[in-house]
Image (cartoon, rainbow, N blue to C red; front, side, top):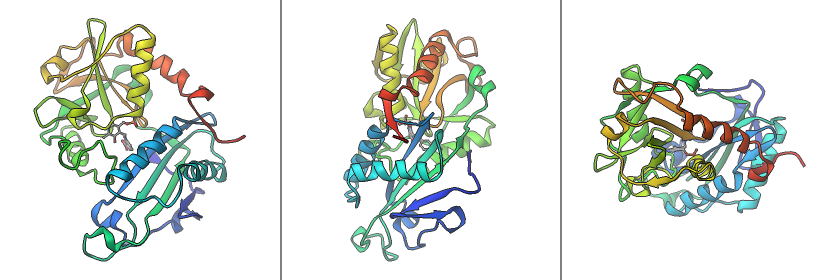
Length: 300
Ligand code: PXG
């Protein structure tokens, strides 16, 4: 859940609007067709964590859907920082959205003259409470498979999230915290908005790019931390049965940060609490996110 402050200023195409005036056209293809791209970014203690990496991914997503963002990467970084400054934020969750723009009621993107850029920065994003952090979350395996890499692949961070939303609805219906989504071949892919790692016999495993998972920025950082701590990280196909018998398992994402998994389809994973290797990685992650060398300062 994103908690919105009352007085937030939202960037839309170079202007700043109060929350209730921050609106875009009903003819925007972002709304009509989910035609656009986005990023979810976090700032910790005055530093935007991995901002350049998020901007690079945004432009790669846009390139894949042939959307020309009307700002340079440098201008986009400055717009994000200025939005944070205008809102006096040091700790924030940032949603950066680029829509295809206003078109007509046909889906042809050539009708859309100019993409729209939206930047929303809010003081707090709390996906889970601290008890969940220690105990871990419950998951179900969703019936809906991840779109494969030769379809609307989630390698592209597009506005088209129905694939994940259907899985989230299933988790909600079963009273679980999150849904696990399988790839086209029945191997584990990712959660609705997080990547997954399992720990077995002191090694970490995570699904490969070919599963159709989003190449997560948090996952990349976690891989680096794990290797620095001396753990091998292997990218390979993982079955649901392997997950059931893992020693530890956790999700990674900008919103969730590092979240242990307590149970999947009522099977308890490991000891049913945050495991020792997850905890070491979590502690180091919380240090890294505040490291000035790992991000971009808001205030200079
Ligand atoms: N997989 C998917 C499908 C995602 O959308 C991640 C993995 C994790 O990537 P990063 O780079 O953040 O480590 C994401 C990103 C939400 C929410 O409301 C989730 C994301 C983005 C925006 C909102 O849960 N996840």
